Image (cartoon, rainbow, N blue to C red; front, side, top):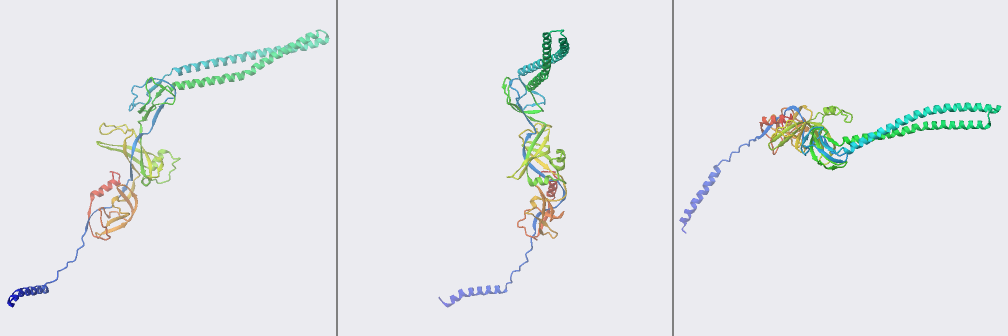
Length: 450
């Protein structure tokens, strides 16, 4: 290739390289700006100090406070049955629901009364015999005295030859016979007390038989002891029943009971008293007042919402070792009152309801949402708008809130957002959530379900 053509190709290349080198030498380095700290947007509330009402919730099944079973105490055929005696029927207290044939027991009463009359007649006869025997004894004793005088007179005559020896002996035999007669009367009188005691014992036995027969007659009528709802019927008219057979089961309508299970740690917050209570010797009403628990039963079903004022009745007998819960039994008075068909049903047996227990109010408590706690710590916004991670001491944990004893001051701003990661001193942009704070206050005061 000619030399002139090579230069034609190389000259532009060399010129381009020279230009790039000149541009590189004349260019200025990029300006680096300082990186600004970016504030993290968080939701906060001001921690309120208010009066707190501790609560605990549980679910349980309604049952009647009293159940009654009519067990046959006598045998016989059922001759009468209440026309409304059916499962689910509501009958008034004192209603005659069943009658067992009373004929056998009426006859037993008549026989016992006849035996009593006969025994009384025997006692009267014995008294008359005793009176007659005492009179006869007096006569025989008088005759005995005369015989003794006559014997003494004849003994004197025998010595003078006035009477024979045979006459004297005859008089002696007469005296002995008279003594025997007197002794017979005495023996007869001595037997009267034992005979009278025997008749009196027989009289008491007949009276006991009469009482048993009358009791059996009364047991032929089966009446409801209280206004009840019939739960079970196992008897029909004309049926023969034996002693011990269960005929009818009924539930009391005056009170209903609900047993719920509450964790033992929650019960320690609810059952709070200012002094020790002697449970064994304290009046139940006074004990309930000292404990200070109130309760409400609530039903929430599709289209149904109802509540009943309840009353703490007692604790169950044992603590469940597996769940660490204690049974709490509450009572509801008049569970069938104020029924509104379609909206407020009666509190019937077997209904599954929620029970809310409320303890004594605890004034001047500092509360925060429970969700704001992080393993015993709170995220607090300080005056420099930075995160301060605080260790706090929790007094009471409730489903919707917690009360703080130390580590937080009233009105300090507590972060309620999920802050990940949470770094001590990080810059925050807090936004006050008044609605959440108001909800917290209502929950802590027991004005709404947490």
